[in-house]
Every structure is written in C-alpha cells, then in structure tokens.
Length: 400
Image (cartoon, rainbow, N blue to C red; front, side, top):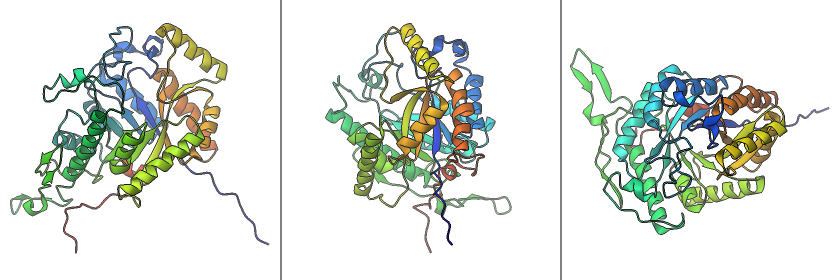
C-alpha cells in the first residue's frame, strides 16, 4: 500500500517598508507614534530591531530629493503631515552594526545622483552589515527636485505615460547597470594585504568597466572592494509596463501593487515576459506584492482606526497599494491567496508603525509559522541567502 501526503504550502518572504511614523498621513498624531524622536538613530534602530525579532527578510527605508507630497509631481504645501527625512543610506549604515540577520534596503534616487556614488555607498553598507545590503532604485520626475541640482530641466508632467518618464526609467536601468559593474570592478581576492612583500592589492584584479551609454560614461574601477554579497540586492517598485521593464532588466526583487489574485497573476506574467525579452529568463527574480496594513484583533477595530485617522487627516486615505484592514489571521489568508497568483513574497507598509509593525511581527508572523509558510529562525547570513539567491560570479574575473 502506498501513502501520499499533500504538498507543503510554499514558503513566502516578508519585507517591511519603513517610512516616517507609518504610511497613513495622520499616523504621527497617534499616541504610539513618537514624532519627536523621528529624526534620531534610536527611533530607527528600534523599528529595525522589532522587524528582526519577527524574522523579517528585510526592511526598506523610504527617501527622496524633495519634501514628501501627496501630489506625484508637485509640492502640496501641507504642514499637517510629516515632512522631512533622514538620508536612507546613512540611516541604514548607522543601524547595520546593531543588527545581525535582517536585510537593509535604503531607497536611492537614480535621476539626480551619480551611479559611482551609489555604488560605493551600497558597497560600504554591505561591508558594514557583512552582507545584508540592498537598494531600492527610484526615479523622480518632479521639476522642483531637478532645480536642486541645476543640471537638467524637467517640465511639468501630466502623467507617468509621458515620454520623459520613459527616458527616466531607461536612465535608471543604465544607472543600475553601472552600479553593478562597479561592484564587480574589484575581484574577490584583489586585496593581498601581504606585509612581508609590501603588496596590499593586486592591480591586475582591479578592472576598468568602460561603460559608454546614452546617459552615462563611466570608466571605473570603484574605490571600494567588491561587496561581501558580490552583488547586493537591487529592488524597485513598479505599477505599469515601463517600470515593469526596469524590474525585468535589472532587479532581484520587484514590488508590485495588485488588488486581487487575478491582477497579481497578470502582473507576474507581464514581468516574466519582459524578463525573457531582456535575456534574463533563467535568472531568479522575486515579485513581491505591496500592501498597506491596519492590523487589530477585531476587524471592526482596524476599520474604525482607519476611519479615525482619515477624519484627522481631513480626507480618506488612498494608496497605490491595496489597503488591508483586519486581523493577522485574515491577512495571512489574503497573502496565501495572492501568493497563488505567482507572488513570492510581500512588502508590508504598516499604517502606523508603532501599532502595526508589532502586529506584523507578533501577530502575523506566528500565524504564518503555524501554517508552515514562514521561517522559525534565520537560515542564512546574507540577504541574498535569505532570498535563495546565489552569490554571483564576478563578470571581470578571468575564467579557467
């Protein structure tokens, strides 16, 4: 007699998106929000420590080149919401020595920053964290942010289908390509550090990248040795075809915003098709679904909490991502349902960090563990390892 068992449910990955006091614009007015501590290292260290206690794969840090705004292209002039940020890369670097396992993924804006600077900053973060760094690449099409730099002029745009935006995403793809090549511009054993012979580096193992493209001309090599992961994680948020193409061409993780399983399935299919068109069909690429979450033990409490915050804000909060209100168990149901559409993980945006982040780590995570779909301990020492991504070979190293 033969016996059969049902296949185990697929494990899923979880990231948490950290921004200000939370993703609801009125979150800073909650008693748990601690807005007076928002620009301290201790505040961010506490959030990341909570996420690490929950065995989260990685956290992302939001950033920008202008003040936050509810308008996609212009300043909104509001003074009743959190405005101002610490630098995401520097914050992640400050937090890194205080953590042991969790990945740290700051946002970087490709539009007005040089890839050489970003490459060495993220390489440094990977060294400081011993292999837990990544980046979230983002563009900006805001005219007033271009004015901070004076290198280019971006006119007023009416929507993301403008050809200028397409160019900005193409530029971002080249930006990441330069960053990746610079990470490889030092071979892994380029540093000899031989006191007896007086040789610190092997110059033959440092390489010019000689990148010549439409947007950048970069010779290299980097000044920072190859990161511990070889290639730190590259991630990007995408809502439609042009940014899906950026994810397919250059990312290890793409964040998408489906509102149901059918939409998730269609988005994943489009990204996989773009991935094949980009010649990356055989490479692993995670697609994470983004959700804003209000979590309480009683679903009515979560709904009422959102309503109360909406009233404080003076208007209903809406988002590019699906907004979930309910219990951790109900959210676990939804994540598994969306996962059936081809998603490999989720990036959760806590509506109020002081309330909803602990609800994720102490409510959702134990529920997913009971279902056998989430880790009970960290199983790897690097962020690539946590996501099942191999350490890539150096493209410039001589092969036998």
